[in-house]
Length: 139
Image (cartoon, rainbow, N blue to C red):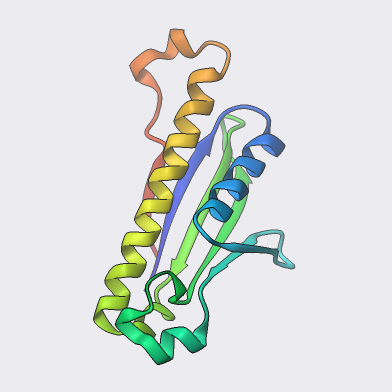
């Protein structure tokens, strides 16, 4: 089953996209552009996942797709999609580790989005009314 998280970014879209991509690489992911315009982020290898299974750690294969679009409020939305099909190759522990890795990445993206929102013009006026940045989606 796939899970996805929407993270909303204020400010210039190109800069926000670069921040998302930098955050992904900081978490050990290698990035490539997909034909549909989304970004594919891969960490680890299939060989290490199959050989080491639960002990693969950061070398466990983890693949994410980041889909980009603009919402009704002109914010850039980064939808992080994780299909758990490769996580099961690491066994039950591998599934849990993959979920934790994705959760940590999404928290980092939320922090980046919150910093962008705080730096955006009019941030003081919005105060606590700012929307939650990441929205989990079941797919």
